[in-house]
Amino acid sequence: MRIKYQFKTAVTGLFTHKSRSLLTILGIVIGIASIILIASTGESAEKLITNELGGLGAETIVVRPGKQPKGPSDFADTLLSDSLKDRELEALRKKSNVPNAVDISPEVLISGSALYQGQTFKPVILGFSAEFMEKAMQLRISDGDIFTEQDIRGKARVAIIGSRVKQELFGEENPIGKNIQIKDTKLRVIGVYQQRGQVVFFNADELVVIPYTTAQTYLSGVKHYMQIVVRAENAALVDRVVYDIKQTLRDLHNITDPDKDDFHVDTQKGIVDQVQTIIGVFTIFLSLVVAISLIVGGIGIMNIMLVSVSERTREIGLRKALGATDKNILSQFLLEAVLLTGVGGIIGVAIGSLLSVFATIAIGSYMSTSVAFAFPIIRSLIGITSSMLVGLVFGIYPARQASKKSPIEALRYE
Image (cartoon, rainbow, N blue to C red; front, side, top):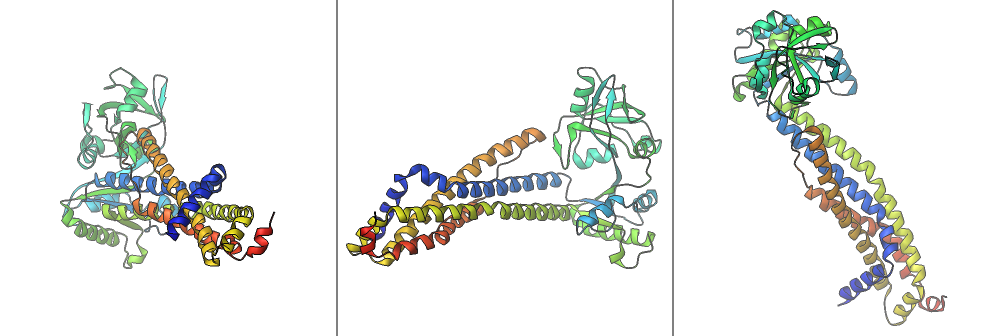
């Protein structure tokens, strides 16, 4: 009965000053809502990227120039490295070197805009193999055709465009056979991809795919590749193919110490693990930054509880005169603090979840793909528990101040 009475008294006390109670827990609400928003959107993004990477197939292997990045400076070295060229590509294509590889294509990424009769659009321009793109990423043609290996060898000035590129540049006009201009080079459109939306790290509808030899010769002017993509016969042979790739490139570059590799090889599992690690680190970091608002909220709780103790001095004196102990007074005020922050935590979880739903809808609409809402159950429970702990920690001092008051002096208080 005592606990029930204390709980009832605490609720009555909080509802007596509704506006003050809501303003007091505002810091808690903002902190918990922000943490839930960050955790939920981070988990949704992780699932989206993981699913997109999974769409490449478990048998896909990516060879990149430079050492395996282990920090921000390493990424810069990787981008500037030119260790993958035609010599490396031809070595990897030899069946004697990598017998279990079924497809291989280098990649060249170009920055620029596409122009057609006064219309301009900035697409993702990719020098690649159209056949590899069709097999690995399931990009299908809605109109026209893809370019072949013969076109790649001949450095043909041809292009396949995404559905949005077609809409932005040609409108209702048939683009097949028409020329678009990228930088100073005219490229004949021979195909249009079906509408697909987001694929891995780019939007397929905003894509312009050209032969990688064409991209090197006429657009980029560089002789190296930003990466080489390899497909193994099946997922079970991926490790074997990775081993063969590393041995082939080490022999080609006269490398005997693996720590001195001027290239690195990633499988889909490795890329997924990297993405999960990066998102996890950012989520934790941002959550820790946002958690500062919980401390601010805790200070607000302490302040309002001290005001409450001052306002209820006569009540404290009366209760002590009727037999209430210091422990009863202490537990009463602690319960009010914990109840106050607990309510703030629940409101924060609700608001954070609602904002997360809107965020996933907005991201999905912007990226033209489906983004599933992920409710972080564990983090929500941790958030509510943390908010209650904030009330407990920051409520101890005001509660002790209340419990120490002398009943005689308290009854005299005006």
